[in-house]
Length: 149
Image 1 (tube, rainbow, N blue to C red):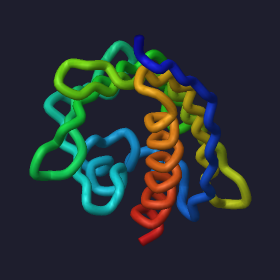
Image 2: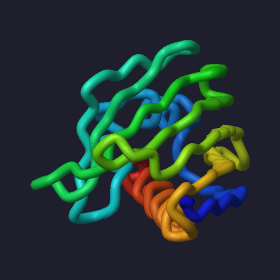
Image 3: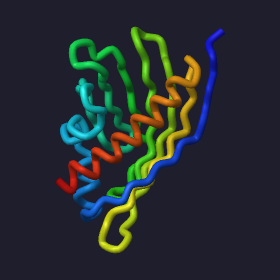
Image 4: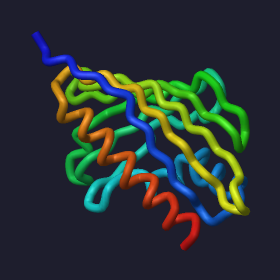
């Protein structure tokens, strides 16, 4: 039997830019491929449909293999305020983790505060939980640098 692990992870990032600019960087899959993965890795979208009921189908990992595949399904989108979506990550058809992600955006002192809550279940132990923690931390830092840069 697989080793099940789960956690609720929360992250926040203050970005010195209007919500409309931060929102555009998140809503647009082309921009997401720039800031959304750690250095040395890449992401490509085979499908991108950012709307309630839409879904993104993507591959990510080292650019020579793109070993991970994923599907994000959008459950709720309130422009410049809220995104709720699921995310399923697999390798060669084996599901590694399933997550429910909630992105919240608010203006604070002229900057945009992004809060991300990731409720993740891993079917392969705690490494996927650690991967979510490290990946989201880096992605939010890179989002800030991308938008402010």
